[in-house]
Amino acid sequence: MRILGAVLLALGVAGGGFAQEIPSLVQAEFSPPRVQLGVGETVQVSLLISIAPGWHINSVQPDVPFLIPTELQLDAPPGVKVEVAWPAPELVSLPLSQ
Image (cartoon, rainbow, N blue to C red; front, side):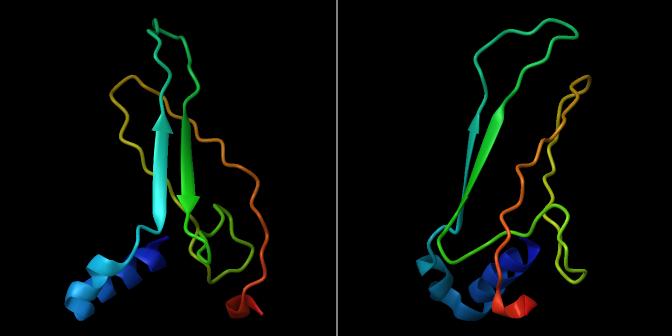
């Protein structure tokens, strides 16, 4: 993901108006439930990340040492504990890793 961000940043700096023509490659949809919680209660929320066709994001634990793992940083308010459950990775073969 950092590589994709660096590429988009470089295109924006080097390409001038070209970067404005790049479609959004990553979409995020957050779906918090509408509930009131008491102290010690838990709730599950979902964050759905969609990636444009032809692009990928590395696993949280990539199996190739030079790949940068995906990270998710959330700023939770004090007293809120966040646990992330990652889906199983989808293994693909890319020319870069062959």
